[in-house]
Length: 257
Image 1 (tube, rainbow, N blue to C red):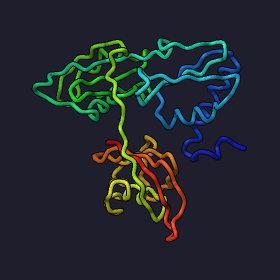
Image 2: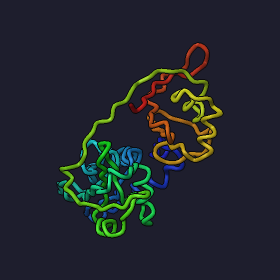
Image 3: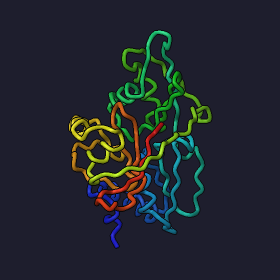
Image 4: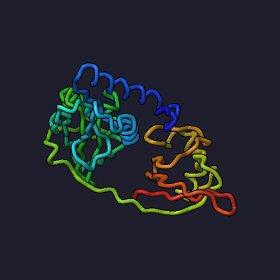
């Protein structure tokens, strides 16, 4: 049975990458540290490596509660520590009395540096303070070059990950019925919007499925897919329970509070 049949075609290239990492660890009997992976990529990594006795893996992104994490693939002799993941944390110092900044602005400022998204971990806030995580190899570059977010001049203060803002996400669970598993139909149910409204969001590029922008209204959704719609928050398709007597799909989904 091929591992590929469990995933969508657009995920095949990442599966190939994971297989290459695995072969590298086995062939060189060495350790492989990845960039930050989103939760979907972490799931693929876990599925592909599975219970391989020659290659083990661990994940860390600054704290257990963060979403984006780096992975270490390693032979059985190796025991990774948190330091081996080479994760650095910055807190943003900015004139909070005079300006406001947002998660979206911080991400935009990070991407303006010309670095890969995989070099950055989570952006965290308690509503006033903002922190973000980066890989060690770019930490100095980011410190010296990221000096503004939006209209705010900022200073980056490096702090230990033990001082990371910790929070636990809360999700509301709901049950609903849908006529199909198309993306526009699923999101219309979850966010209580018309399909026309959802279609406009999808076509505008503000909808993500499993952390990647999707611009197809007929994109087929699957159990455990994660969604986000800019301005409406995040959600998950937790379970497809089967069909009702009226030939509709009964689904369970979660919405972030």
